[in-house]
Image 1: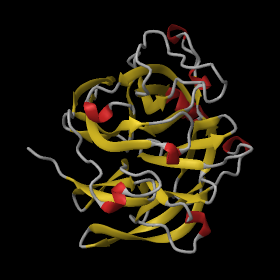
Image 2 (image 1 turned 60 degrees about the vertical axis):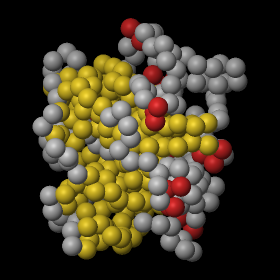
Image 3 (image 1 turned 180 degrees about the vertical axis):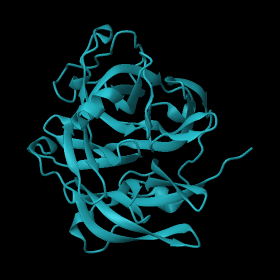
Length: 339
């Protein structure tokens, strides 16, 4: 998918899509559509297949826009980088997205039964955890995505789990404030965390899905292709060994602030396997990237040299990864299991 000529809502690109199936089985992209001024909306586009292979899209409009005050700042606005997980036990598609509001990027949540009508549950709230000696709500946070089924929580009770990536530098908001790390964390690079919501709390009131607790660090940068930071991509996929998490790793130079056009970076894709009985534990990970920018569309765009996986779907027994290309277009790659 590339930006449609003459479409003002896509003037600065289409990228980083979520995906989902409607009740009739149709596969859809929910792409981030970027208008002039870096104002993002979430669209809906039916995926067109040829011989079972995704080859194009048919646009069906916008399903989420920065209509709420907390999704808009004085000089910025946006609902960005959606991740959608269908959760069978809830019978709902759960969308996490970045609300680019008055205090920068903050994670938020909406739910839908049909991908077209979305009910906002509001900004995510991270319960205070004394042993971290900080409030996770202070920090910008991105790359949020839910597991598709309940998992054992740290207390042994079944819970819905969400991956996320806090960013510890508060200098963007208050000059000179700098980095504030949680207790026990010594590396200031953004890494992958997980937080939980007890199943019982969600069964009592769906709105509790935004109230996350029992925060744990899952993974930090370890290998050269992850030198600057890592972050989760698509919803975790259950495989025989555990939960497969496709993630991105970043190298290069990243100035302060949130303007992507100032970055001189390379985004590549790797993978983690998380223990199915304890999703805070990494049991395996790739030492080299699975995918790096190689094509012209991946190398040249709003931010060059970016492959940014955000969704996995199975079509006729084959898994496909949908990903952002250079912050300007959307690509798809076949994901094969090698034995």
